[in-house]
Amino acid sequence: MKQIDPNHHSGQILNNIDLDTTFKYGFLKKSLVRVASWYMGKKTKFFLDFQYTQESIIPPKSNKNKKYLLYLHIPFCKTLCPYCSFHKFKFEEEKAREYFKTLRKEMNIAKSMGYDFISLYIGGGTTTILPDELVKIIDYAKELFSIKDVSCEGDPLIDDTLVRLLSKKVDRLSVGVQTTNDEMLKKIKRYKKFGSSKTQLENITKAIGKFSIVNTDLIFNLPSQTQKMLEDDLDEIIKLNPEQISVYPLMYSPSVKKKIEKNIGKLHNENEINFYNIIMDKLQKNYNQISSWTFAKKNIHTFDEYVVEYNEYIGLGSGSFSFIEDTLYINTFSLEKYKKCVEKGNLSFERFKKYNENDIMKYQLMLDLFSNNIDMKKYKKYKILFQLLQWFGILKKDLFQTTPFGKYLLLVLMKEFYIGMDFVRETSRMRLNR
Ligand SMILES: C[S@@+](CC[C@H](N)C(=O)[O-])C[C@H]1O[C@@H](n2cnc3c(N)ncnc32)[C@H](O)[C@@H]1O
Ligand code: SF4
Image (tube, rainbow, N blue to C red; front, top):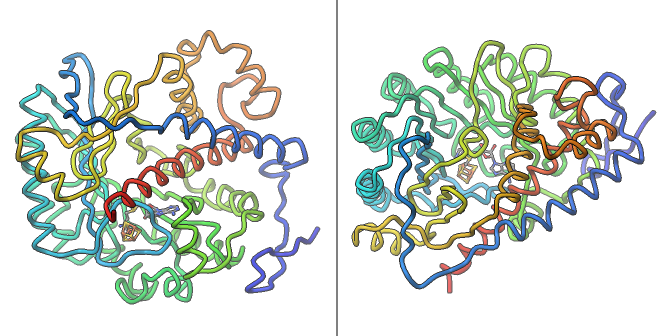
């Protein structure tokens, strides 16, 4: 059966891949995905409806019996990609060095509140933007806390010096590739800064084998992306042989949507499912699927979504999120306000949202399904829901594992949730310009 490629820029014909090897996507499943996505969008709006307060927010004291993760946000990038809604500013060295200094002070505040952490996740933006500052902040975190593993997100500007500096300090280095197609790299404004796909892949090779885990990020369903382009992306990345591959569906909040349409092309959703089947088909041969969008080499235990791995985490730095006990907190997005807050001896929490037990349970169930890690003892009271999930072909019949269709559905739900977070970032950043 042939299907017209809705990406009519290329006007190419897409061969429908053999869905029998993965899953059939009939009317019922299509409708289920639509309804679930609509419901998730609505639920997320409620879930992320933060409250502002004039008073400074004092988070609860640490609980010695709990394991927390420390997230640090580095909001600077050398190029601002039009599809990206993460919290970041165009890199200015002086501002960035000042920011790292404030971040170290904020870590001291968390320490004085009794918090200790076993894992450190540094995200961005681009954490490798000032390698000497990155090393300093990792060393400082290890001095203050019981950190056992460190994960960082960086861009493809990797050279031997960076690898030498970081390889003994960082366990997992995640690098954004997004696409290996040079024309697409130009459209998404990464070619000029990071070079051609060949150059970028050569640079990433320098890191492979030097860290316990190198993860590479790809994005699928970009405007005008064809089946062939995605297959080439996956083949190139498989050749590179990283320990982990993350393949994200394109996600966008309203203002990012405008930027994507202006710079990259018209958005379409019709191909997402076909693209997802191609990804599962290609990657499952050499990798274990550890979540709806992450694949890891066999024998590697890791996860890139810190929100999934840890029930409770503290986010320091401008624009970070924290989840402690029953409350989600969000830090100020303004760098000036951030500095003032920390100078006064406070964490930079600006807004919060409290949840009831039932909401937390449902959220955790979604994360457990997303990462295919379902402990039935935890969800005894959801017996009927689990039967329904099996009936709709989302869970396998006897094993409590998601089916290929279940994995796609969970990808759609997580996408909605992340779009909700992007929307929070977007509206928070708009307030900065007032
Ligand atoms: C915070 S970025 C850090 C990576 C690094 N700054 C870089 O671009 O090379 C982490 C990843 O998020 C993913 N990402 C960013 N915007 C996205 C979007 N709109 N849709 C899907 N994935 C996105 C990209 O794959 C990116 O590599
Ligand atoms: S994708 Fe990476 S480099 Fe591009 S704007 Fe987002 S965080 Fe910065």
